Image (tube, rainbow, N blue to C red; front, side):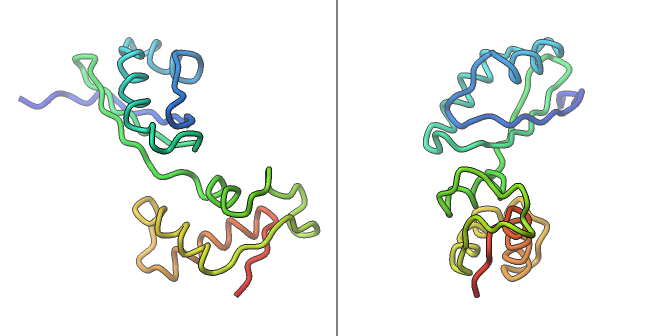
Length: 141
């Protein structure tokens, strides 16, 4: 017999650095789920991507068990890593803080493709380019 799904929730945690401190502890504690088990599993699965912020979708069941799916890092995090800047511009229309090439956008779109609702690489690159522009990053090419 299949387990009954009670619900889902989302978290964003740095890869390999999960602890029972917020946001993990409160999210698991209020649902009566074993948080330390999640911390151990997540840190083991995400050790290769250390330092990257990863979105996680946790599904929990009636028997207090859970499964989780690690999504690809958010586009702004990948853009910041690609450009080497500390953060996006506070005034993206006036102050440009960096620039990216089409090749860099394609690389990021390839990483994000499974999580985007894009049918082609061109539309995925267009989405990432829009995110870049909203951060004050100039798109070249």
